[in-house]
Length: 155
Image (cartoon, rainbow, N blue to C red):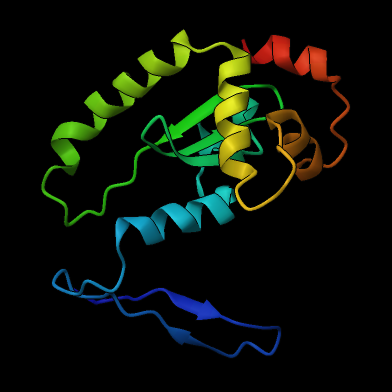
């Protein structure tokens, strides 16, 4: 069997390098690193392949109601992400139960409660709260939904 590694091409001159898998024993990357990567680059998640109504994902928080990453789409649909590194033995057993518990919590929240939690997270270190609507409006080009319409979709 031939061992094939992905190759990262870094520019238009076709320069790049082969990517080499890290060892299972290597602890360079932790779940917090993965959470931050997803928060900064939500397009990594291939949600559009499942349902285009969830695209584009907009990051709205980490560790909100213990949810590792919380995203929202311009159509008001929430995406809950629980991160587990594949080397974590509990990953397969508990992630589904955790996601169901988070969904249960979120369905009991009003839009106002969710917005308050998100504003607290996104507004850390600022004098001004940052609402879900404002976050989506700033992140999505050609977002033409009113705040009232957006809140109604998110309920």
